[in-house]
Image (cartoon, rainbow, N blue to C red; front, side, top):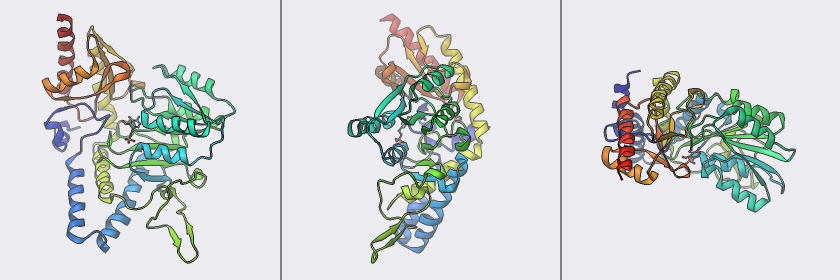
Length: 391
Ligand SMILES: Cc1ncc(COP(=O)(O)O)c(C=O)c1O
């Protein structure tokens, strides 16, 4: 992998030590250029001109659907192009006819986007939430999950990767257990594709919600939901509107939804952003998913090893690579995470996120991360520990 050439195609990397792809990935120039090109065409030709309509809204959008389908190993008809993970979760949640007493299993490390809608559903519809308490031990997680399944369980929502610890959950095994119990599975894939390959079918889940703006380096505002073929017509679309390929008969006052997951998309969308997302996917594919995974694993292994040697730094992410990802969460003795985040930015322009629940910093290691950047972060952690000891 030619890391220097890749970095040259991502301008934000020249302006900071960017260790926060887990929140928002930096935008490659090819994607930004496509936003400029596509909106330039809109400006030049007018939005509702044949060129824009066919090449952008019809062919362009469908081409991106095909790219997303191929990325996830799903059929194009199983893909709804959404705005974000939240959209995907809400489409599933509102698509099911809940009865009081129905049970839903959630991990205790779901993002608020994957928790708040369920808490509201529990209040509104009497659905009972059962919490899967995560540990970093996959065997124990599988065991605890099995113990939560009851005849009333209807769905389990599980993050593919915990946004708190970076732990990669044993999703295949959890989905298999759920399937044996007749329980639907919704995977929150915010931190998966773009870090490692995702095979929708091999995972054995029913729904897979993801976003374009993190590890896939897409623009903000594009996401995806994969829905297993045989479930597309059983999920009730709550939000309906117009779509270019939907049938509507004003005289008969009747409508026909699309037969595919496109029925969960509706109305006017920022089409140019989806075209740009297609360029981000090309960018990732150009680097190669296997090469990306290998590099992230190598970088994380040396970063974690160095942290383990630092008294005062506590790694809250898996040490082992098999269940670890590029998200590394670290508690630094003597520091409030907010103060440390600000200090890192002010001293070295290091961009990170914080995990308040653990009073910890979260470093995102991506394939384009340079070894020298990780050394800068390690040096800053050492200095912070030293300075806190002096106080
Ligand atoms: C695991 C996880 N799920 C969902 C979200 C929310 O994503 P979106 O803004 O695409 O809905 C995030 C955002 O950080 C996340 O980390």
